[in-house]
Length: 139
Image (cartoon, rainbow, N blue to C red):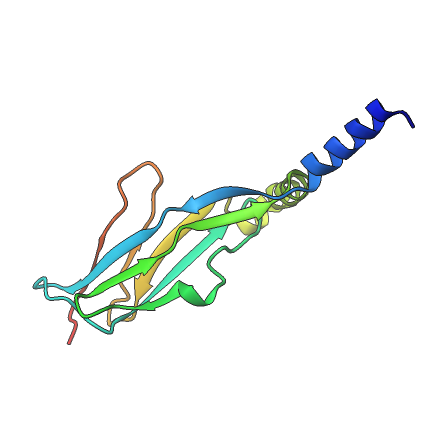
């Protein structure tokens, strides 16, 4: 095998298998308050995220559950998926084929807290990041 072919082969392997990042959600700072605007320190807030096209959950980590600080603030880090090109092609193909049964593609990210009404806010990459979670009937 000549040097040119070896370089092409190594390059192809690197391009197919070397993971690269895709941002799912930026760092997210949220203030948890009641209906009167009073902060809710200690309130548990969970983040849920999933990239349905790749079948990867970047929120399946311990820091997906936070407790509001004394000002009612929680912070979730930026969520990133790391996967190589070949993995993305195979995973996307599978999940696109399964789309009629599973019913979702793309990424979905939201945060929520316990009731009584289980409020939640959603991340939309085409809108500004929501920064307040209002808990109704909080006591």
